[in-house]
Image 1 (tube, rainbow, N blue to C red):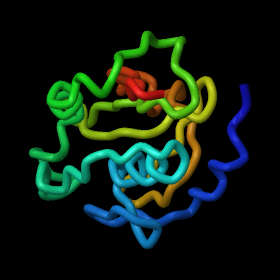
Image 2: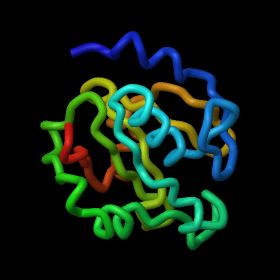
Image 3: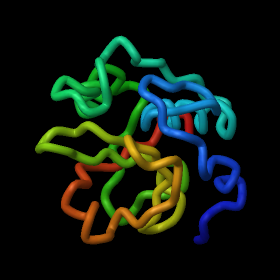
Image 4: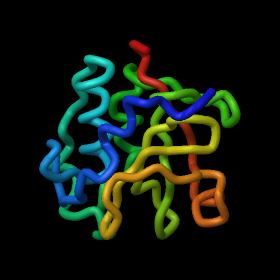
Length: 138
């Protein structure tokens, strides 16, 4: 498997709190945009679920996945594939998401970092990964 060429269209899109379009995105906004543009799947906005991506009450993806469990299937580590959502914890809470692009690689955006590829099995992220999820319609 290799990083899909279409994913390059998202590189460099800027970070923006509650961003939901190409003018600026937060991590869920990026997932939502890719799912809409690439897979034709409309995901909820969720902007009402958090004040800021840096706040303690930031989007708790574990809780969100539980809320819409019928739409998501947990994927065993090592079986993730392109387009699966990766959930990472910050400050001991699942607060960040990205998209699996290739084994060990994700597409993500976060405060201070425009949309980019990075290794989720790197030292920086490896211990933060809490799980992988696949939309039931994929």
